[in-house]
Image 1 (cartoon, rainbow, N blue to C red):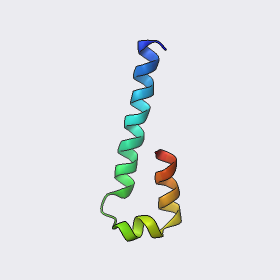
Image 2: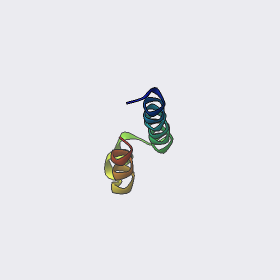
Image 3: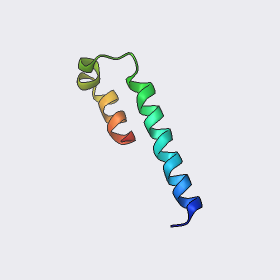
Amino acid sequence: MSLHNDTVYLRHMLDHAEEALGIAEGKSRETLEGDPLVRYALLHLF
């Protein structure tokens, strides 16, 4: 894999991690575990 492709791959990983943090921010563990939509979104991003 070229450096460019590695950089793009890592950028996607960082973007997904930031999006997951944004979804989880301010929510309790009970909300994260109890809301299927939130749970599925976070699993997709991971």
